Length: 515
Ligand code: HXC
Image 1 (spheres, helix red, strand yellow):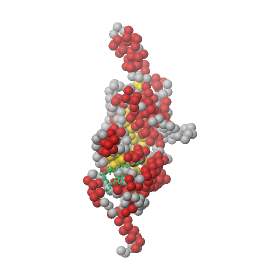
Image 2 (spheres, helix red, strand yellow):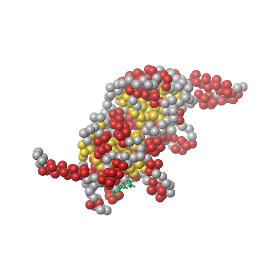
Image 3 (spheres, protein in one colour):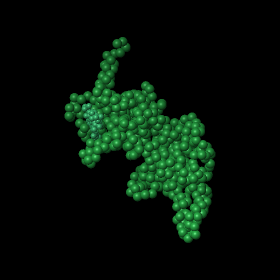
Image 4 (cartoon, helix red, strand yellow):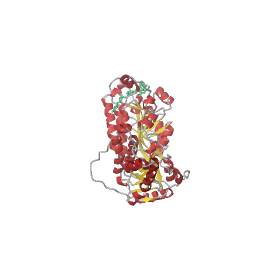
């Protein structure tokens, strides 16, 4: 062994012995489930050769239930630093093959150490969750570990981006770390995320449900809204993570990287996408793709509350956060879930210096007993709060309908939009012409010889007078009425001047956002 002294040789052997002391059965089981091993996951996400592992030799101190004899390699979690497409990140991956990835105090302290590191370095923190939860043998010490993680998740919120990838069980209180982070990734048939498992539900409630139907990836992406990205394999999930990281800045003092500007791909003619008839649906994502660089749009929470679309794109090379009503789903109304979805996204963009582009086409808030009882008042208030609070550049385009509370909520001038543009077919009014005419001309319509004909006349009269962008423009609520083809150019020029924006607010400890 020329060139290697005895101590170095011993170190190499010690390191190898930790890395090789795997539970072969557990590893085999993991592979059979389509799951990679913890280190392989990290290597698959990071740039080749960029991973530096820390705390490989950390050991637990538990002396109970036979634990004193159990050596748990790395204490069931792998931590370190690396790069994604050249961007530095801190990362950890729980190792289910070591005591089910269960979280004891040493395991938790490895995680909190790498989280502290991420905040000090000002880089994103990525956590891969695959764990049976609090290590039962360690009792209150494992609960302490979770608490220390949640505390750091909260302190890191709005300072560095936090990404959670759920690649296995994430059960009990463990779910609250991902819930406190900015983006949650789930994978079909691999993610299992719930507070109380099927066994407990059966015992307490007498109901039978599979893990998949309780907290599988689809449920989290479509129904609960806990997840932001859904994929069908770990490889696809890692590509999504990599793409996301290119759109967002490393920390709250930086702007996202600028990319070389690209024209939209041209598969959509922007004049043709939005039908003139306000009742006709269309896919607002086509408008986004017709406006942004390379038609490249990274949608967030694509499968949840699809009546609003949120995601990242670039304009002239600069990242923007897009919020758009989706007329294809529930006519694009605001409701409990879409308000929550949009508000959280807006707050992320505001915290991380990402300008907001809002595309408006909605009939208002969704009416109905269900929504009222579900708290549409307090949930709906979140979007007002988020837009009003945001001090990043805010540009709004009213594509077609902007009625009632919906007009105000969708980043109107009144909530602090810096630029409000409207297309010529925009209708900005308290409500739709039909509803409005029925109320204010009720008498004339009722008393007419032909009420239907009179209703039509009155609806047209109302439309002529109010259902257009010019009254709003005459009052300065709209800065410019622009044509669809002019829009990209307007937005790029707007962004050029707006990137310098700096807005101060009255000093306070923090606001109290509605929930
Ligand atoms: C210690 C654990 C463990 C845990 C799993 N293991 N969970 N050890 N503490 N919480 C160990 C198992 O004993 C087993 O060890 C190995 O990990 C693999 O587990 P299996 O059960 O064989 O795996 P599988 O059949 O795939 O089932 C996975 C599972 C199940 C569904 C996650 O292990 C499970 O139900 N675990 C408990 C989940 C749970 O209730 N967690 C909540 C804890 S309370 P051996 O040596 O046999 O290989 C909690 C509160 C936190 O988390 C509160 C914070 C606020």
